[in-house]
Length: 316
Image (spheres, helix red, strand yellow):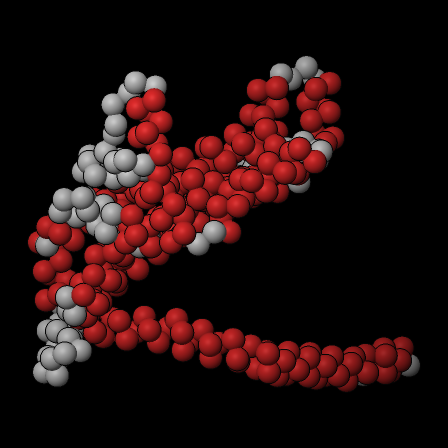
């Protein structure tokens, strides 16, 4: 009798299990249907405007494609082999590396310092936040034209130096200074972005942590080192990755300010040389190989930096 009762109690269990399984299956199908409804347009757009151009560029990089020469031939990896010995490309890679190092360090450091100064309440500090963010709103071409006028040999900056008795400086005409001048202009424009991101990070730090540190007798530097800086790790990650990508794809500033000069490619970045090769010299197969190499470098560098900085976030 007891055995029959136990069997009767256990009998509905498989039915409940099957019902639960059917419920999960229906939810999975519903989720898949919703993804297909709302996700498919996004995937189509991404495939058409990102994946397809990348695949097409890779195919062109394996040919001698020239829009004005209908005789296109498959050349395999010849374009990539030529890049390894192309001094112009290697110089542009060095220029891009120097520009990237400056653009990652300077706006990050200056943006953090300014954000610490502006992390206060009041209309005065709010106004200065807007002042620092204005360059980010402006077009890169507009910023480049303004700074070209200011840094010209007879521009406002050299005129000011003349008034104080200093010799004029060839900010954009001296091959040894032109790259650093362009880097300074780009860093100035990106500074506002770093300030805003760091301010957002600073305002997310709980006041209780500062109060606890003050009660423990921590100095201002100790509070920054042990409280503020660790909690700004996500902001540092965002700024570093954005600045890294912006530096590698720098073209507008180079084109307007120096046009790759002065001299032979002293400020020509990989992006600038790629567009010049593809649309001025019309060697689009070779230019596509440059673009693919640049894509691989940017993707690898971004992934490594992102992995290292995110690991730091977890460790902190």
